[in-house]
Length: 275
Image (cartoon, rainbow, N blue to C red; front, side):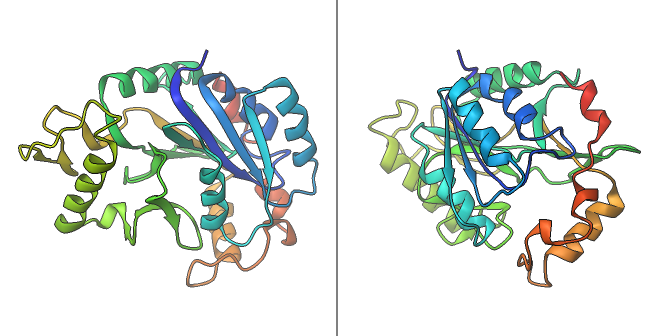
């Protein structure tokens, strides 16, 4: 039985048979038990990732695997979102896990599930820590990583890198007062018949990230659970970004086309302390 009710894991992968977090199989086995459904889109793997996904889909009936030729990250991520049928969606990459302070994956999902049950919202913002082989974790200074959110076509990724969710034409972290009111109005009008938490009252109050509904249901809320993103080292991380993307943040070549690709896939043994 899943811990995150009515929630689908949505992910895109390519050539992830091995990565700093142990590869696609280890990632899915540590994530699939805690979500109601899973959608994984392979965008052109040639290293055995696609075959491994097919094997796992037979073992885990709630895992659905799709193929889509890669064009850019946002289009690929949005394609995965289009396959989701649950109310909420959780977006993770194949080198990321959710864990609590005790480095427990199950504990992280339990904590997140309990938080979601007691803090009703449409969008949960999550901090991401970069975990390198050596040194301290690099903690993301911003929590505006929208990884758990309402499954609605109005909320989609934009841009070539595909890291940020937009409401219509505006990135969440840049919503002005007018856009926040518009988002609140959209959520209230669309979901008031299906979500008892919404009301038509004009007594909705302004919260830290916009507008909270009169009965306490929020639009945005910060999750106390962090995502752990496993990498090799900071130097390779910087080099990878410099090589892969041009000055506009557009992916110029597939990662596997670079000589350094095997270096970026080296296993990070710090993953072993998470269970």
